[in-house]
Length: 197
Image 1 (cartoon, rainbow, N blue to C red):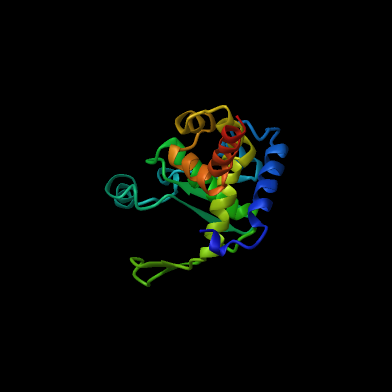
Image 2: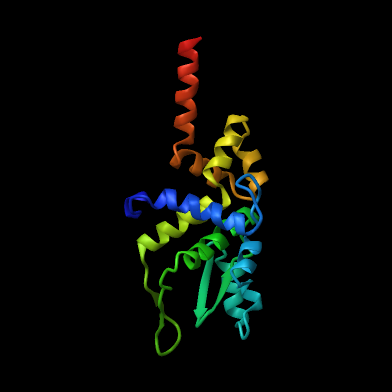
């Protein structure tokens, strides 16, 4: 993922996370509710069942037939933004999905373009890997700031405990521990202590 991220982006994402948390009155060590962030950004959150005019067959496809085929999407119209998220996913996964969409907005990314065929059956959209990687990194920094994650690991909290504390998935905790270098940093510190003992 990080191959598409510009030099300095990761540090900027951590600073942006802290800035947003400060504006919400939260420390780096507090759980951030994506719904609180959405309200602050004036972004409406809804599930597909709340979409006006949603066809029952389409709703069945999205929530029953293929609930794992999609996560969330943002619709921007003028100055207004709406995030439609998948309520079939776990709460931890929903937190990541919603925050990813909000990160696109915070970063001022150009929304993807949806194109439908004349019969309304084929949908294509533009895709920008760099923007997706940036939104992922920022979203995960918002949900799990590096300083908070480091502090939890120093206390020897398990991935399960950290996930429960921050309202995310264990998979995200494990990924952030690895990708931020926290695991290797702590291993090096422990090795150094053993050598000095």
